[in-house]
Length: 225
Ligand code: CTP
Ligand code: MG
Image 1 (spheres, protein in one colour):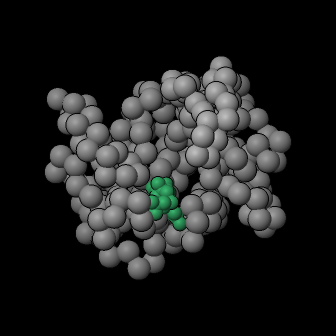
Image 2: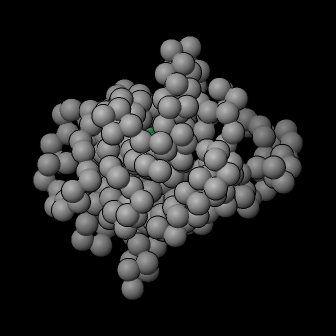
């Protein structure tokens, strides 16, 4: 079986507020994107790694990337469009499966990715890394209207692994119909395709705000001890 990866890295990082895309912030001497690509690089299972970056990105070509499997792909306006561009760019490779992983999640461990791959391939169905919600969850605007039972609540992480053709079709159709797509699983749910929830480490955080960045610096330094 052939598995290719897509790394959406074409966002502007507006919530990070540093004046340049957050994937180029440095942590322990390397950019976030380099850390993420190093993690994926540990997986010999991946035949290609499509890194989706914005056309006017002037930082990507400055990175020290020795990985031969990387190809650069043009980003889209929304994350889902960036992923779709990645899927189209991979048509020359024709992978059986595609593994999508946010550039902004450098804390993922190769072991968790292998667990996801094994679970999905063994059961022949798509799936995502996810973590059971640990907090008490409230619904409401200014005042809490209710406490939402959390037995069935999961936090969606990445990577997300799906059959290449099914994901491409689901994303194309969902986007053309204007469905709100925030991850690959939401397109597959909309297309009524299976999304297996595979338990992953909850410290595989997405670096979104300055608080996340501080936490990631601590966690990455600890991982590298
Ligand atoms: N992404 C992308 N193309 C876009 C938007 C986002 O490839 N048009 C990528 C980001 O680079 C990031 C991942 O999708 O690796 C998750 O998105 P998010 O955390 O929202 O990043 P940004 O969109 O950059 O941040 P913000 O929403 O705060 O602007
Ligand atoms: Mg965004």
